[in-house]
Length: 138
Image 1: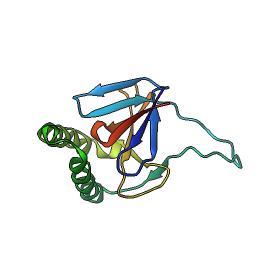
Image 2: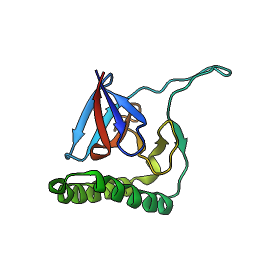
Image 3: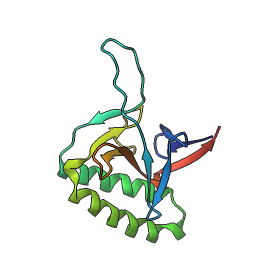
Image 4: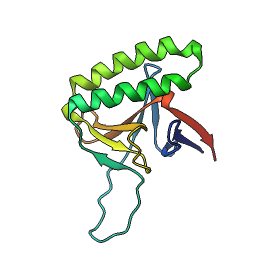
């Protein structure tokens, strides 16, 4: 089993327990399930929703991308910059469709996971920046 951690915070973001798809060599899309928790239940899901406006998200995203780029090997910089820029434009175009989640530490400098739904409107999936993760074999 593989566990994917945020390279900046060490937060556990997801595992290969759910289907994972690499998109444009820049993001992972991870199928997920929404779980309804009964009131009063003590559950630690390790993700916390974040409400951001578009301008704030752009500013935070630029800082995050710069920090991730600094951790990458030199030969990956160009592909990361162009791929991240292209994919970020897709997200901005549908910004209102996304929900944003931080890792367990809620560190604002860490990765923000993007939750959206497939075209059927029922199937949720998270998007994670590939270069912002490290895989740990369990």
